[in-house]
Image (cartoon, rainbow, N blue to C red; front, side):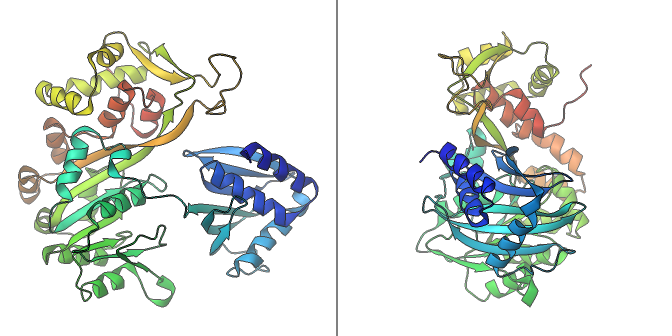
Length: 439
């Protein structure tokens, strides 16, 4: 059954005030359309449901406010983890469910009291999705080679940074899947365990009973591990324990919240890490975002020569060492025609949202120009030179400037390479990267 049919059934269930069916169809639509989150939110005169697809929210349906409380109460009761009578405080729940298309999912739900009533947000974890291979994530060119090299190291720290929903966990799972072999012992501490993988010892942390990332990391060292993954480094103690684990012969994976791979240096030092520990344990810091891919069905070539984003794009390559740039172009398989289209003629691919044959709404992207997402990556490989700079007390700005001069692919460069190859448009790249002042 197509998702449009489920949308029609959802509208019918709303007209009939059938709360049970509303949830059944809503979860099915969310999973079938690839949504990561569902928002159920009240306003003064009406309520609405939105779903986040490919990182952007889309309104699904509006409904009368008269039965909003019934929807929220129904979910609270079904979850078994929320108090239906408590409407003044935010509440959390984790629920397992099966959609109308027989897909098993986990929901991480949160209610928030607002001036017009309680808002419910549900994060969807689709258990039917398989862990993608690293080669399908968008780790192109030298970025792919860097991560392959670092996965072979016996010890050290590999950190992934980025905002919520940027694909950090998926990247780490793909890394673990790549090195998951019978001869190594891999232990993970997650909140929550989003994907269950054969061969991994995965533990769900429970901060409410004192089972935190820190306590899990301490216990992991008594489990004879080779590789450890910690869901997130949130405090100084967890960071120090991760560094100690790396110093004692373990390969440690984790995430941290910063805006870029370079800024992670400042963040870690501010958390209390000593420069010699940072230089001695860090192998690789990855920053990533998820960019919406241009719909291949309705894409056309357009001129962007007068666009300020295009001027920024050209500026980003002026400081790129010519020999290193040539090597990167070859590694990524960028053709001379693609390069000339962008740099000589100023053309990029862009979706139109319309079927090229009929002129009606594009049947693939449903008129939104984009279909699917691809990773945009920044990799700071901790070379001997960068380690020496950290030991000499150089700032994150100086380290970053040096890394770029040595051909580091930052978010902007990686996004622009994907734009040249017709995977992204300039709007998507500069959704994540600041536009500089062009003189």
